[in-house]
Amino acid sequence: MYSGSSVDGGGRTGTHTSHAVYRFEKRRCSHAKSSTCLDSTASQPNNIFSLTAEQAQEVAVFMEFIRAYNAGQLQTALALLAEDVGVSDCDYQNSKVITFQGKSQVTEWLQQRVSDHDQLEVSRIENENPDPSSGRHVIGVTYSRRTSMTLAKLEFSDGITPTLASKVIFTSESTLIQSFANGPYGGDPSVCRPGT
Image (cartoon, rainbow, N blue to C red; front, side):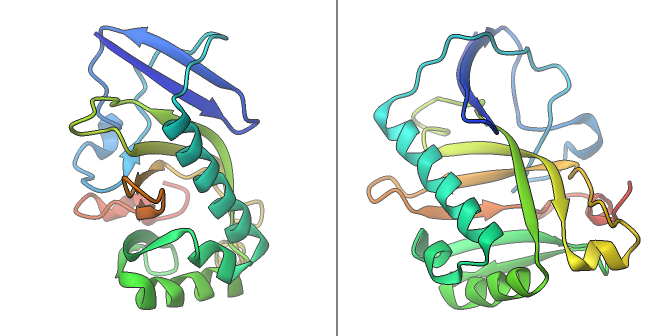
C-alpha cells in the first residue's frame, strides 16, 4: 500500500492511499530515467493532508525557485541550488534533451531561460514515493503550461502543457535543489517535440 502527500498549484495539499505502485511515469514515457511522467492510474486526493516540517520546507524551496525562475531573478534562483546541481531540460527548437552539471553550467542554462522569457506554471506537487531510503527528498512537479519566446516562434504562442513532470531532488541537510530533471534524460526525446 502507498500513502503519499501532494500539493496543487494553488498551495492546497492532500494525501491519498492506494494499492497501486506509483513510478512517476506514464505509459508513453516509461523509459524516462531522470524526469517524471504523469501516472494515469493515480487516485485523486481528498481534502486531508499531512506534511512533515522537512517536506514543507522542500516544497517552499521549490516554489521560491520557480517564482525566481519565472521572474528572471537569476541570483535568487541560483542561491537555492546545490553547488553540484544537475539539470535536464527539453530543447524544443531541436527536439532533443539537454543536460547541465554543476553551478557554472546551470547558470548558463538559467541565463538562457531568462532571456527566452520561459515561464512554468505549477499545477501540482507530489511525493509518490515517501520511502525514506529512496524517495524522502524527492518531489514530482506537473505544470499546467509552459511558455517562452522559442515556443511562440514555433507557433505555440499560448504555450504548451508539458508531457513530462519534473523530478526534483533536494540535499538532505541544507534543503537545496540537488537535481532538477525537467527533460527525459535517458528517455524518449520525442517528448521534447512540442505538440506531441
